Amino acid sequence: MTGASVRAVVAVENRMFRALAVLRVVVLVNAVVLIAYRNNFDHPAAGWGCVALMIGWTVYSIVTYAKPIRRTVRLLVADLAITVGLLAATPFVKGEWFNATIPGFWIMGALLAWAIRYGWRGGLTAAVVLGGTDLLIRTEFDQGNYGYVFLIVLGGPIVGYLVESLQQMAAERDRAEREAAAATERARLARVVHDGVLQVLALVQRRGSELGGDAAELGRLAGEQEQALRSLIRTQDRVTAADPAGGVDLAAALGELSSRPGVEVALPGGPVDLPAPVVSELVAVVGACLDNVTRHVGESAPAWVLLDDLGDRVALSVRDEGDGIPAGRLDAARAEGRLGVSESIEGRIRDLGGTATLSTGELGTEWELVVPKP
Image (cartoon, rainbow, N blue to C red; front, side, top):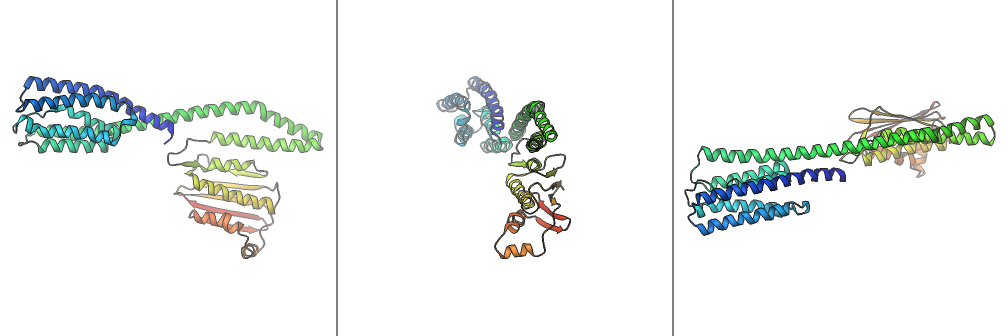
């Protein structure tokens, strides 16, 4: 998850804890009013001591939960432990045949804090602990008690699930906004480049060809730079947001190779997302193939790179129109310790769990590389 997405998730959590702070005050006032109205303690000093603890912990928890850095496991456990302790103290403070527990609905503070912080799993954990404690301290179990515990166990996970959903939507919205802003900026830069630099390079190429001599060479270089710049703009149009698991668009990475003289790259219409290490290795393999074309066929010799997304695997083809590799040449290179093909190409593909097939002859050389998707 990116830093901006983390901020979006924390923002949702902050808003939920602010709402919980208001709820804590409401349920505290409700509990204190009912306790004062009933005043049915067998041990009044202990009972009002519990009320003072509820008031003090409510104030402390509101202040502490307000800072994300303070929402630690220790705080959450303490919140739940104090609530469980007040429930467990009820039979001793009110007597064995009590009807309502001391905290009453005040336990919602700890329950929802766990749900907000740890999602539906946290809500379920706190609900089971609180509901189980409420059942254990009672001598009788009636329909009213069952309904109370059932709502606790049902409400905790539901609130946690809703919080997780809100956080996910906030992160996705943040990512979409950043993608839209990046796309807008890329489009603006592409227009600027197209209206200025590309037109100048095209003019230099055309005039250089007309003038001949050294100007023709200058025109040729301008043409290569124009092609490279256009390829860069196309590549930027394909850029997508980084995958949370570290995914990279293989098509965009291979598209940059079209800036090499004589190289044409054919790509699928959409992105081909793979883990960054896999993309790095595949680009290195294709680069090694193109280096061999430059070394053995010619510096500006034409070469073609084709990428296919086959669903569960990707297929790459690198082809040239040279004279082919003489029979036995690769075996001789291995025997002499020159492992360029066996390691730079075949070894890398083998480490990725794929296959590298070489076809060579008078019509040229072609590497077929197939790698499974993780």
